[in-house]
Length: 109
Image (cartoon, rainbow, N blue to C red; front, side, top):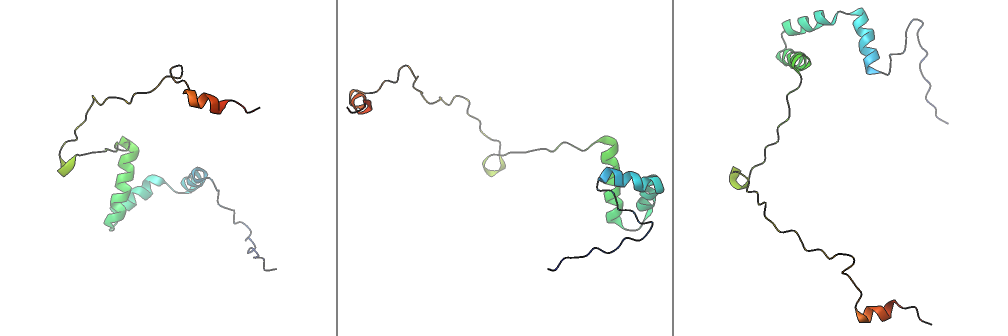
């Protein structure tokens, strides 16, 4: 049997929390998140700056609503028809079996 053995833990090393909120709280207990965000915004990498900025703006103002735009043929407006007749439906009391069906439904003796 080939079982994987886990590496022994070093003394003083704790298992990271499985809960992301608990992990963030543990990190923020040791590092000032404001200083980290400011240093990221002052850094040279534009992608990191924009990602941090978008995240901070979303936290402050909320995320924008997603818009769904539907268009008709060739990008024009959609045509909505409101007066389409509904299909005619038979009522249960009006639906009676025909004469031939009556005989077929009787049990044979």
